[in-house]
Image (cartoon, rainbow, N blue to C red; front, side, top):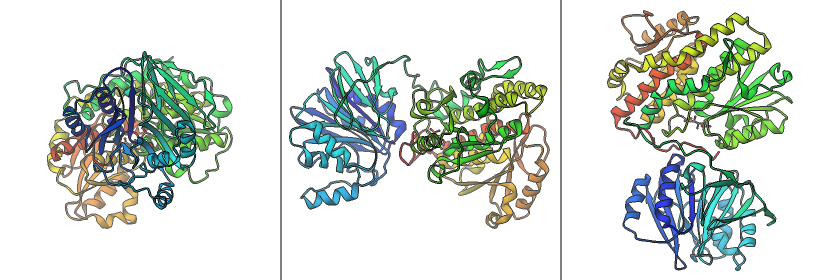
Length: 605
Ligand code: F6R
């Protein structure tokens, strides 16, 4: 994770770097820093915590330097304090570096350098980069970069300044994303296009083991063997979506309320003759459509979306679906056969484990379908086909509209494939399709009155532990509900298949233990009800998420959702659960949009 930015041009660098960092704060916000180069000297300003602390510090400085680099950190090595904040500078003050990624052999390199007399100020892996550059530096910057960067194992997107080159930024990349933008008499390097300043007209992506020498409006790119590479630059087409809360108190709430619109957006153009047809996968070969197995991989909420999608695909397409956490998939050598569809789900399209899972699947000859929100991201670029979720920019770290559009994309995928495989009757496809088209209105209905959930937050905000249970599609929603609440409220939450409680976890249920039971799945309702009774008889306090007018018992608190097929239950159940998490976190005074220890884009493994 971490966000990096660099600017060289004719304008004052500090405000450009700060603006870039504002857009990159989603990548980490433990600390931030900038380094400017002026009169052959670095001036480094760093601050612990959110970017606003750095902004306060920079306001006191009056540097007019027009070259600099900046960083917003998500700590991997070393605590999130000012010393460990980037940029990191070599002891001889020749190089200063910002880095995103992990140098896996940093401790070995550090020991070697210490033997040679180098001393280190921070606990970070990053500090070996400026020190090793300084160790190899003999006036020839290209060969110095080549020697230093070939020594590193792991991942890096790096931008650095060298005191001897007053107008130049140097960059290198392996596995972590890095783009370079070019304008008239100015250039920018950044972790993401959203951080490019408005005068930058075109950009290119640095690929693994490429180096760049970046001057005002002039960019040279080299291979690891120092051969010049003629890169294609792409025009920046759209202005980044407005970074505005539009009157909502938090981005998370705004994004929750955007969900009906985002789903409509996703449905647009995909319904033909009362059935689903996804243009992006129109050319899938019959061999792939008729595959005997489908894998779905993702991390966190994307994995939970996969759980919800599995039920729909298995039921509608009659094909077994194996769902895997990307960080597990990538290291377990799964026996994926050639041309087996592997669906990789990712909002950001940059999650390191999901990228690695995709590459592993590719190497086995699988057919990769990306379900991705960010166009132009690594997963979007490297998938064979991409279904774009079109959720727009998601700012809150806890995903809401990103997740829900992933779930919807999987439902649409299931209906598209079912139609071609002829696994269910045409009429059933039409009924399900019609139902999906009504989902946005049903979500709007839930959002039209948030008072029940808001009042419940009052009762739950001071709990230490909350369990979530559900069966089948209810369990998929329970998993996401539990993650949502824990990540923004810091309450210890866990989700279990309702029938699994009795195999151990029920030992934790005591008088007053809060258990949220998701039980909108009609087919399994009675089964889940038995599990609810088991909890109640041990003193547990139940909150049910049920279908409208479903009377369970006067004794239990409940939240109602509109009726829908059992298959589509997660997409509705999660709405009140997102609100439940939001109002609890708000009541606790948590930093809702930027929860502690997290980052929006997880580019380390
Ligand atoms: C939770 C959350 C994370 C992400 C996960 C994968 O609210 O946002 O669990 O879902 O880090 O991220 P993407 O979808 O970008 O690959």
